[in-house]
Structure formats: structure tokens, C-alpha cells
Image 1 (cartoon, one colour):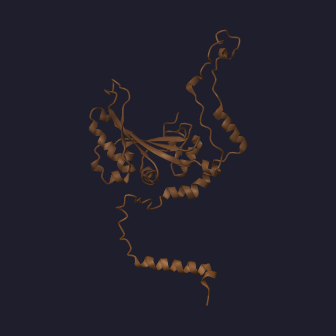
Image 2 (cartoon, rainbow, N blue to C red):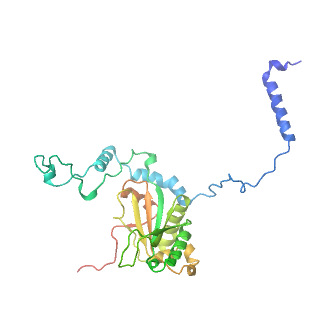
Image 3 (cartoon, helix red, strand yellow):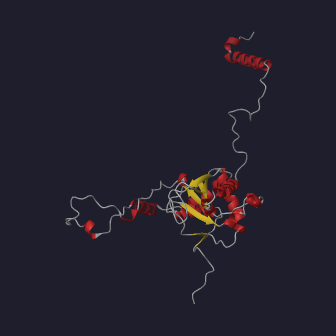
Length: 290
């Protein structure tokens, strides 16, 4: 007869099989609807086309295009850390009696040191952080109900709820007082951000007349690009075009792209990868001087 105690794994197998059989005899709990559960989170139901395009193709191209050799990167960091001292000769003159025992003068022009980029790696590839869509409605100075058209339009094209912008100062010539609602702004992040760019590039820009692209001079030297569109561009969005009569007032709007880039060149390279056109000059077709 086989001694079970000499083979402990046989005893463990019998215990495991016994517990499995007991579990099958117990009635299972009824399955509740997952949507009714408070801890249910749907997550992503589909892959965003532009987000997948960035992760698989564009990020690798940006890493190659924005590469700097160690010497160029060192020079770039030194320029960012450079201070802007006063340009007056009296400030540099040590023997000047007006300079002695006085605090040093502040830099001219209000220039501040710009942020220094981290070492180049796959984590420092520029990418989109958020998008701001802003519009100002001057008719709201006389009647604040005109803001409803802009609020509904921005909510339709961005799928996010906008917030009202109030004036900080008053202008007597415009009959504007401080604290009056004059516009609206919406902040887009995540999948709605890529969906908005997709609609802007594939539907609105090809049908827009008399728009020659974003000027190359746009940018704040820290990787943020802003562009403006006329009122005719708002009516080209599919959500507005299908319900055009529901929006009595069309207004122009501004789009601000906030990126993780540290220079405007890197930001323009990123946006051009999303098929946003750039132009050297603001206007074309002007009269040539004879």
C-alpha cells in the first residue's frame, strides 16, 4: 500500500480538489450591472487616431529632428541662463560715486531667465499638454445674453463646458465696466484635445478661405503657439454646420496650443506634424511696389 505521508504533494492535491468541489456546490452570487456600481469606470472605448499617430510615428521623428549635439546643447543652456545686466556705462563704472553704497540696478526690459530644458532623452520629446479656445463677444457689453451663443458654440466644438471671462478693468469709450462678462474660454485635455485638432485640420482648415497659415513669428519663446480664426471658421465645424440656425451670433475665436517644448521651433515642428500649416509672412497677395 502506498504511504501518502511520504509524498506530501499527493496530500496537497487532494485538499485542493476537495476545496474546488466545495466551491462548485455553493450557489454563485447574482451578477449585478457593472454600470450601476459606483466604482465602475469605463475607461477608453476606442483609440484616438492622432494620439496613436503621435505615439507610433511622430514622436520618433521629433526626437531625430530636434536632436542637438552636446556642444550645441551646452551653448543653448548658457543662453538660457544668461542674465541681462543694465547697459549704462555708469552702472559698470566702479569709481562712479553715484554707484557706491547703492543696490545694483535691475535688468533693463524686464527680461527674465527662461526655463532650462532637461537632458535629451525619450522623455523630453515635445508633446501637447492642453489647448485653450477663447472668444470675445463685444455685443455682450450691451446685452449679456449674447454670451449664450458663444458658450454653446464652444461647448459643441470642444465637448467641454466653457467658463465665462469677466473684464478686469473698465474702458469708458467702450462703455465697459470692471466685472462685466465679455467672453468665454474652454480648456481641453486628453482625448477631446486630439479630437478637436482632428476636426480643425481635416474639416475646417481645407474649407477656410483667405487663410494662409500660421505665421512663423508666432510663439512666446517657451513652446506655446497661438493662432486666430475668423467667424466664418466657426460655422465650418460639423456640430455648428448641422445646427446653424441654433446659433444666432457667430464670432471669431483664438486657439492656444500649450506644449512641453522649450523653444518655438520645437513647438512648430510638433504642430506641423499634425498638419497645421505655417507661413513665413502674415499676408499674401498684397500689391507689389513698382
